[in-house]
Image (cartoon, rainbow, N blue to C red; front, side):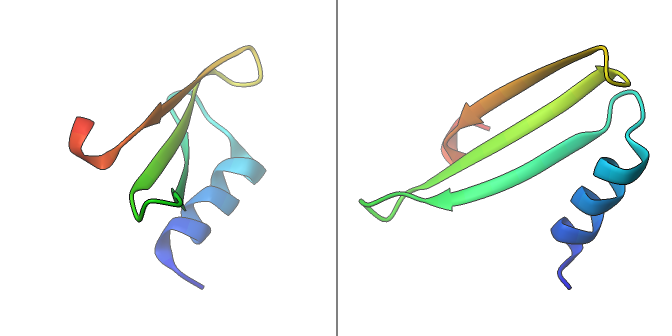
Amino acid sequence: MNCVKMINDRVLRQGQKNDRLFASYKLSDDKKLWIITEWYDYKQAFMTTLMLPNEY
């Protein structure tokens, strides 16, 4: 099991303030798309950001 999957699994089980879920997808033109979802308050508010790695 890779590190990102382990962290995502823990966040889904325990979810605490300021936790994040990460996902990366390969686009058709060989670019990657990152999807980051951050919890601000457990199950109360969250924000999802989509970005390309060069925008980080």
